[in-house]
Image (cartoon, rainbow, N blue to C red; front, side, top):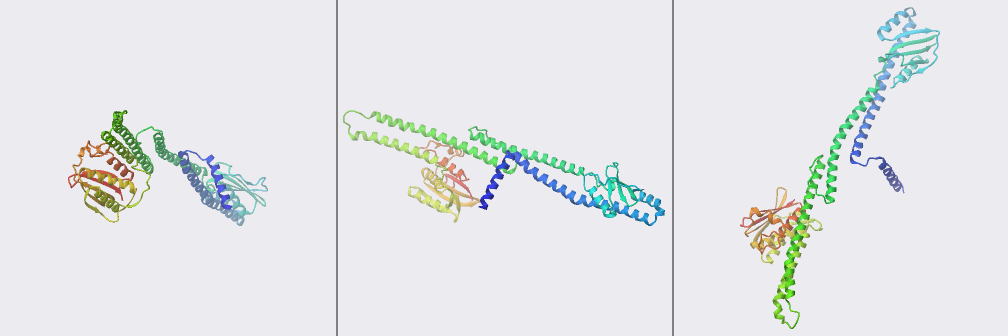
Length: 454
């Protein structure tokens, strides 16, 4: 019950404070800077006022009162030398001491000044003389009038103000507030630059979410904000590439489906609707239609495989050597010739196993169709995991190596498939934070180099 009450009070405080706190990041950042700054200056002022100023004020008051007491003691022990003693006191202590006999104080107390000097001086006089007194701090700009009631008169003392006042406190207050204001202005300039970078990033994200492609944003501000801007640019490029690829694939699939659909329509239109027809006469047409349906299934399957390239499969720790051996055995079963599998042991990576298996199968199928013989290699190099697949096929010219990653780019070869294999491989590798590169193979064909973060 106590914990529930504490939680309710915390929520109420949060709800109330939310009304008064600024809602913008700029305002809250300034508040984070301003509050500690004011607290620091306030603590410094209190420490100065409570320690240094009090100690110095007490010492100044005690010094003046001690000199006054000493002068009065000398007059009491040598009354015939009163004038000489007062003259020497005026020269040495800068205190003008006068005695008014048969007079009385009409008022007592001290006029208030900023600081503890008035209280310290009053306390020192009362402790030394044990008599009522009156202190006028506003007698003149340069002096303080002190009147002490004695048993046979009033002792009047004119003391220089500089001997009792440590200096104008308002100078320290103005310095503290001025420095705080200056530091606050400087901090606000730096914070405004940081907030401007965050605001631009937020505007770019909102515009991109509304379908307005504003292009990549320029990274600026703090290191974390720059990293966020770079990550946003990468995400934006990836999403744009994803949309462009899917659009191109849909257009290609719809275009390629028209040919078999047209042939099916013509075949169905050519079938006689009257009389008796021998089944043998329809066999060629039926075989053609079945082939057209198979071609359509292959196109649709290729697109579905491409669309599932990044999928919703969860990444898990996977033994890449075992996965490579499994793909090599499957390739051998379908007619491919695997010359060698070079794999370092205990290479574990966090990948999507089914998606990564699809990568290796697609590359092995390409090698099998173009050459037939291939080698697999798995190793660590410079903090990365490298997988290479070499074949002895015709290879790909360097000028066309970027083009083959485009959807439906099969180079016009009838044995190249739908032209989505390398596109699927590239998307899956990018989804894993890796990359794919095409090189010349020592076997005379193509080398496919896959890199993954270790």
